Image (tube, rainbow, N blue to C red; front, side):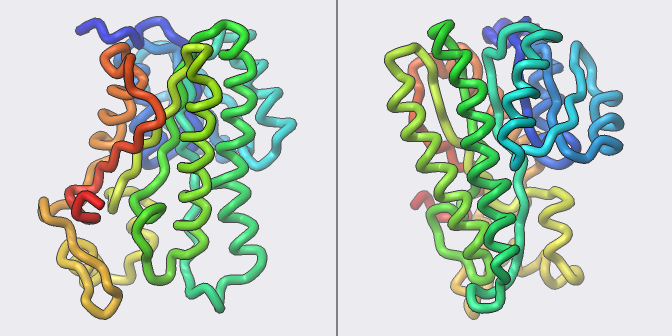
Length: 258
């Protein structure tokens, strides 16, 4: 195993039961980290953790419950050691026009995608600050900086999470703590496939849609969860030791480098 500074570190990954979160947890565990896999879906989380190699443990928690989040970070440190890496991946994607989305749709989007990131980051960063060391990565979305039809709640909540993470990085820089963002585009996950009605929707994702003011993907393929996990692994590694407050877009060129 090539040394990258991840080995032996305790890393919390939220949303670890499926999709990108699962891939990130697996990638970090494979690189020698002690992974605390966090998700509210106990059954799916247990299955995901069982399939990972390396030292890992499941922690069932809902990131929208601030008390549960702080309690979970405490339990992770008791069982696995000081948290040195946090990766915020847990997210939801309510679809619909701005005028049709309900109050609950908006509340849920911000509860998970924004407040969940804030709570988990505060819980971990409080301890990292005392040790003057740590890395936080938030998996956001390219929708955070490019308008998307039918995705206002998701895009807004992700934009807030992105801004929060950069501000956190600025405030914690003097303590040696780095905070960065990874912004995926369309990635082959259950979340994406849940948006598709048939194969035509897959074609629209790849080719774009003039009526929705959306470009396609210049690389002509969807991202794999592992593509996002590799980007996260780089940012939490020693190789990214002088990178903070950065937003790394991994979308196959879909946002044309904006």
